[in-house]
Length: 361
Image (cartoon, rainbow, N blue to C red; front, top):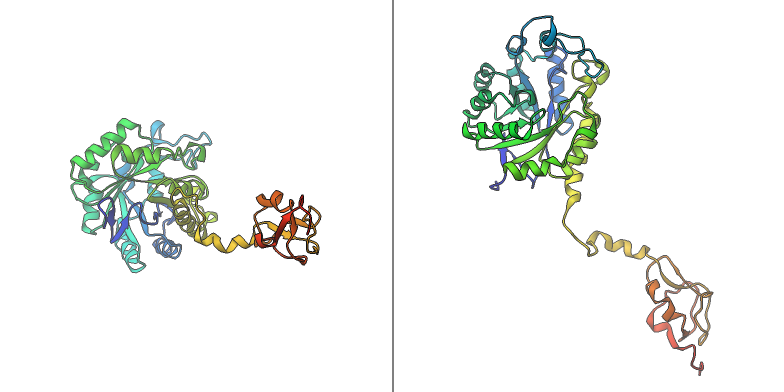
């Protein structure tokens, strides 16, 4: 493995590889373990490399209160408006007793299964399951004690940068590295649900890589796959998108999640985006050689007798491309035919006889 690559679950992540595609289950299990396992299968079938869940309970996240700041504002901008935080997390959480079964299905399907812990008890629990890496969610990237606790596992860490300003990102990176993390990935993220592509600011990705000297990807909550594919084209080595079996089934995250066929398209198109970057090149590619025959070139378009002048009436630039390039038309029109030429013959230097100004002799 190259020095600038990270390995997670036996898979190398870096600029030399296809973007590491993470399917985020979040609350799209809709309270059913059977559906959660189907989501694992759907992720594998769609070509995802990893499946991520979240490890928390409503009680580790908030208090069961129905007032003020413990409510999601019902202003029309959030799919969870009017709900209490507690009820939202109670519905969305993945029961801890499901984790082992989900990770086992991941292993069986060739996926890297891991989670985002939301407090130290979740880290302790996930360590008992020997997860290969950890994710710090955007809303937790200011929880430096949690970051240090994860770093102490010495496992690769992915930190989402949503909501964070540059100072806060720097503090999170310092906490991770100071706590022992040697393999760090930052994810550019806009923490709006759904997010407007105009707020993605993907130009930040190479800046983050340069500033913090680590790999960078995207955690994308925009509709569709456009933003994620664009991120791959400018260097994102990880792409995380929410996955649902069907948006029509509802659920806390369904409105900004991809369906399996869309996730499969994301995997395909992100690879194509990376492959298309290439290098600065002005020479004709080997793949283009066969197409040369379809260029325009100079052809005789009417029978020409020996000694007859070539003219605009009997020579034109047409396809295919076996004659002289069109740029030589003025040279050709100034000459007589060296021999009789049939219609449909490509003009070559051998066909050019004496100049028109000279006698046909």
